[in-house]
Length: 503
Ligand SMILES: [Zn+2]
Image (tube, rainbow, N blue to C red):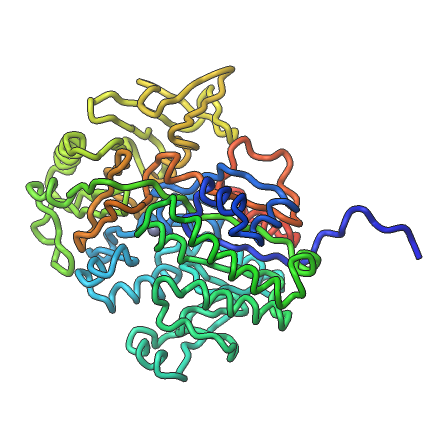
């Protein structure tokens, strides 16, 4: 018998658990109060980062695409919760609220979310971690998650009354990871789990059931376990209340541990990464950005855009405006910027000047009082992630501090890269807005969350989430500012697969 090995071997498998909207302060409180014992053990055994930065806009479709591809919207192509598809002359809505979905048509919203997001909107040129691992023969798996694109074909389920209810919207196969369990629509095996139509508040249970089934039967080398209910709860009750929904998310992770024979046994077999996609900020007021811009001529939902000058796309605490086919687009953009600056609750207004397709030009970000900062990559200053920037104008617009040629913007973490990526995304609007603290933009259904929480803004409160890494080595050197787009690279590198580095 040899001496005991003090360093446990790195587990060969990996679970990536995404807890939607996980706010670091709430996570830390839930763990301290003993309400999230599984997450507590992972933090204790692993490495915890309390400031991992989301994409911008910090909403779930944009962030889910960044988590699974390792790049920002300029490369993955998903610009918001609601956006305008110029090639089709129509709005795309992923489900801001039930009423917003009704404005665009439930069938259209479900088709965009279930099919088009992965099949058309997510750039075909950008590899997902599922695709990269599928190509290497790794057994991949995913519970219901907005981004699931992989190399394996899945036919929609035909069994069960719930499935038949969804049948009109879900006739076609999709390309996913080897094991895909998506609501009641796709199930690569007859697992004993029902999503009950994916109702908010009970979606985590479906993920926990599927996750436990996959662990019990050894079916996944890489599993993306999505726990979305925390976001729904936090929208409704505010980010402080996440202590309760994180405790519930913990129960689902505990189900995976239980079938493995306990947390210790789970950690012998799997490395585990847990992160949020973004966090949430308290909301007290809402901004009617559609009403503010109506005089410019806003294209309506399900309408021919003929005659309209702009499309307006609220994404919770962010918003985008698209300038449509008009005789003088520069004048229309200038008017939109002017109105946005004058609208209470709009904090930052940003746009791109130059050739966006070639990414040559500069980003401009502006405060309501007109003070401006212009920025472009490649100058003498460097940010915390090592990207270099040229700045011109008022650094206080983004609260930027410079010491030893290094930029730091504590109020808007990773501000320049995130803004640049959002502004140079081919599917983004011409004018982007980030809401002031406490404000949210009403969506197309007239919904917002005053008295609760929301997210979407460039602000640290919306953008900084928690990251737990257990049984997996962080990259060396560690990033000076962690970002959710680092995770796809850690995932694939765990299996010896390298994604192109376009972070
Ligand atoms: Zn949300």
